[in-house]
Image 1: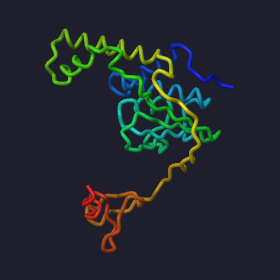
Image 2 (image 1 turned 90 degrees about the vertical axis):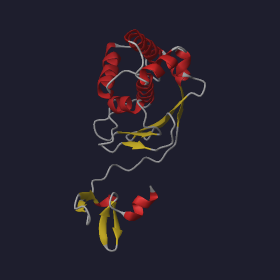
Image 3 (image 1 turned 90 degrees about the horizontal axis):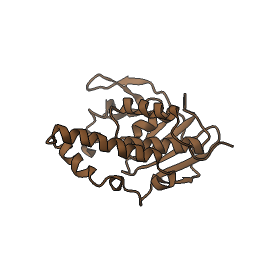
Image 4 (image 1 turned 30 degrees about the horizontal axis):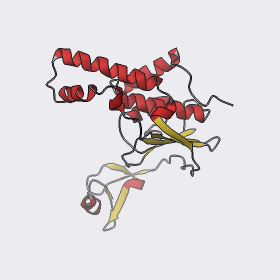
Length: 213
């Protein structure tokens, strides 16, 4: 049986978070939250990083944490085992294809990142508005690092509700042939063309598809 909770911040864990930060471009609370969600799920699923499609992640947000999840789990948009549902929720379902086990990790409604440092939000606003002084920028980065450290060390139950779920395992990613769009001439996956007046059109050129947006 594998461990059900990660224990401590090992050097390996430190390096993996640094890798996620390098991929994302900076350190932030959202990245740390996604990292913890992935870390907890991998432990619960007794799984390592997915080399191919051994794991599947269904994410219900496109926020910062998804980058950490891609790095840690190996579930990526390119491989087709990172599935996005635009629900606006910090909730993630992780599935182990080999065992059929699945776990849903969702933000705990009682946890508020701003409560870790109430002075961070107004400082963040000044930074985002590009009116912060050099001293305020330095203070902002220091406060962010402290909040991130707190998230990385917090008990799982403080950050998330975690439960096993029974879910249909998504089919593996399929490779489709490409066909030229009759209007722009660009090659388009045959699964992403529409037929209008007997011609194949990509979504960008499809009048019917464009009207929806």
